[in-house]
Image (cartoon, rainbow, N blue to C red; front, side):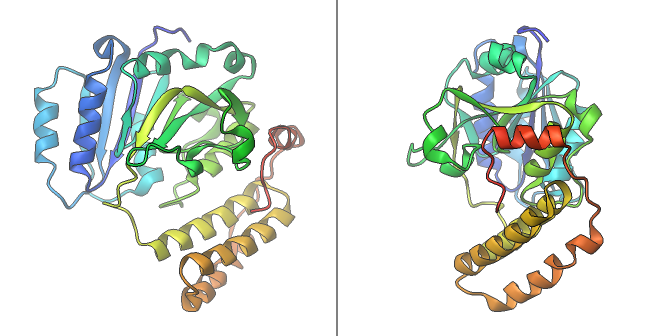
Length: 307
């Protein structure tokens, strides 16, 4: 892989025409965009809002856009899977539809990021970028890919055990070994599932601060808070059961149940309904426990596994 390799940019969008259009213009203004970008794949995930202004922009652009309008809402995981399968270039820059690249040389940096010595030495395959809130200009704390935030927040780079979906680069080659995103995840924690399979396949994951990204975290197109918390609780518990020692499934399910109550202001009806689903995970899900070597790596990067 050379620094001159072209990249594929992957964007899934739903009911955020204005945000996504601003991102496409932002990408188009990048230094050497016409040289470094092999393709920009945009999936309209069955939006109910009009995307005419965005479609008009794509039609008049000289950049290699591919615009796909899905006949159903595929969710995040299936939507990304569709774009990954279509992608033709070795490096994938995956962006949420409500982010913006801060520097004009962000694409240049993304195209060569895997050539950094530390990422070459550690066989790194997925790197999370440096994500800040667009409105407040503060770092998005939950977008730093490590739960020990205060220890890691000022590092220029580090190795880690998961990645953040909003803005990351990945080697397309990993999917030959890991398979695609889990198709039983509609929203939330699909990155953890793929992360553990990436580690099991012999790769590492990293973070790099050199590419700054502004995240609007637009409420448009987002699911309700109750739905979100139910999906996060269930999916995180499922990931723990699939890949980690049994104890972490129980601690994850319990701790996220408390988080659900706190976030939903004690929605006990949803609480008990979701527990009914969670307790059946061991019966319904086949375990794919990480190998000893993979667990050693996960622990070496100080992963938080209890919840």
